[in-house]
Image (cartoon, rainbow, N blue to C red; front, top):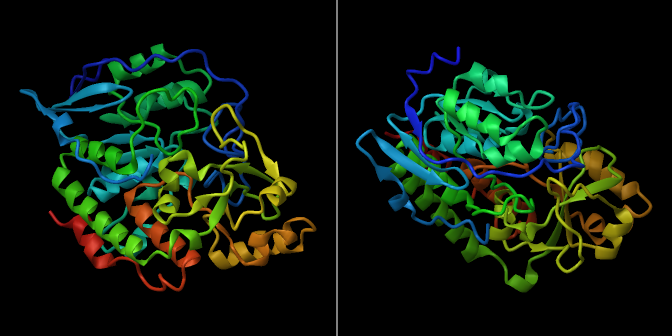
Length: 402
């Protein structure tokens, strides 16, 4: 099988950044078994491991896409430059944000895998005519760990995955394995952008739209990217012009706690600048943990806080991740109802003022981000944002029109 790669359309032109020994002490992935380190905390069975950069403004980096006699090349840290002879037709992703970018560029049918399908929230596409992805046809890259043989089975044209994510989060992966898959199957290209708290990530980060532009270069969709980016700019302009004064914007404690009756929470830092906090930064939501010394969740920091710690912070609002499969009403009837009856949680300002919300997904791309920006604008500032924040038909046409 390893010799049947003569049809491969790509040449890998620079090696991945080498990484040292695997970090120890990571939690198991989403309650799905295995001892490998992963992206977030343990989650409940009904979630089946669902959701467990400064402002992300678009910046033009089109000059980094180079045309060559053989085709074109795209450069992105930590891998470097990858040359393409043709647009990839089969693409493996781990972080669903990259899958969402593919859909936004009209190439959702190229995606063949994500880390865990349950963490790829696709209901946002239901409002966009002609936009979608066959989620049932995707393969879970994480299956109690990540098996190198899966990359051979998938026979992808590109692995849109930061190789250092594999090296630092999953047992059994070494630089030699990354090199082998690159040589025998296809190159890697990607950057772990959903958070910025991992000590091993000592190379450049990309904002959501910087990474989105790179993916557009891969698919040869720079014009579609530009149209989407312009649409995003217009939405943010509307947001900014309708936000209340900065002094009137609340702060938030962003946490992960997937139980219906949570007692312990994994904290995030909104100031972390990872792409899954973009909507909170764009809305001017402050970080309730600022100055507290509490760190955000990372590969090697799996610390948790309880209601006593929350009481010391007493945030204006609380955002709880791990409940994206619930409706807001279901979340209120379970998690919030439990907090309201809890002897400590019930005294929290956020609980008393009805300011406890689902925290959104761990991973997100540009389509999901627009809907999440609308959702949290309406939740935090209902007097300013009561209707749709953007036109669904217009967005769908940006994605689907040739």
